[in-house]
Length: 379
Ligand SMILES: Cc1cc2nc3c(=O)[nH]c(=O)nc-3n(C[C@H](O)[C@H](O)[C@H](O)COP(=O)(O)OP(=O)(O)OC[C@H]3O[C@@H](n4cnc5c(N)ncnc54)[C@H](O)[C@@H]3O)c2cc1C
Image 1 (spheres, rainbow, N blue to C red):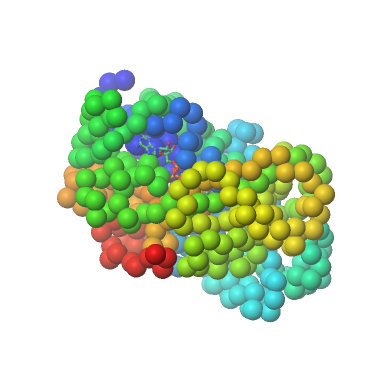
Image 2: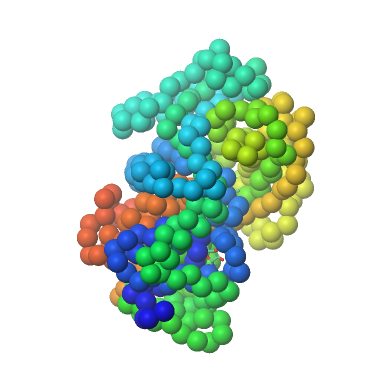
């Protein structure tokens, strides 16, 4: 390849989305990834729920715009991306949850997002296999599902089609203005460098004070054999948000997805301080017990694979997207925690706009790397 106009470090969904966005601006993009194959990091582990959240205005904006971009791209996806317009049902286990459902519905309605509160009968009609004690829920019809590694591959293929190149087995040990250093000691240069190396990204920056801004947060998943689908929507408990935001070292929450293959994907857990990839059977058991409690029919299905992945978590629950202050042409895109599949396309759009020197389509200030540092709620 001739000298690239931009180097993207990391071929996960975020790096892939940044690469495609830059390539669409006629930049020759070189993508480097340490792993030998597709999506060696969180992207290979994620559930692929393309979701709207009301976590914060900044998170909502990024999810909403990204979801629109996913919808716009949908006609171009190959079958392998397994896009499913299944919508999502958030289930309420008690009246407190039902109140949260109503608040979410109002929040979304005020922003033009369709969502409907379901009472107990309506929930049973929508998802007959769910536990009958559930008191209701919230249906968000616009949420979709993709198969993340295939989506990342497609974004990378689009980059290659526009004169880009993907290099695997290319571990980067440092990024700087205009250059990256590889583990074999060689250096590659380009005027634009985008550091999208997932939970490792900030460790590639020279300033060690930045390294702890992102911490790995382990998650477990399990998938069943193929069979008659138990559910029609992505189904998760409203308490999932408490699990995602909680200060606990470890938590599990019901989050189950119908796959277009006829399988059921079961999640998920959250763990700080666990750095080993191995499945923790205690956590897995808690996660499966919770899933069977709310979706009893799961007990009749065989789980054929379990695995783990690491979300790149930040203390204030927002990703870092944008320039690295003091380093001309160096950008970062990391810290997307459990929303990186959803927000990848918006992230790519923000980075591409910033590289062009334009104001992005949403206010990117909340994602700046030099925003005030929040306190971690866990040790
Ligand atoms: C259990 C679980 C469930 C999830 N479910 C969802 C969901 O339903 N919806 C959603 O939106 N998100 C979900 N997520 C989150 C989502 O998977 C991540 O936010 C997203 O994949 C992050 O993408 P990324 O490209 O930033 O990072 P990664 O996918 O981790 O990619 C980083 C890439 O950088 C490479 N790399 C790392 N270090 C180096 C280096 N030194 N040199 C070169 N390359 C390097 C890695 O090999 C990797 O390929 C889930 C995550 C988990 C763990």
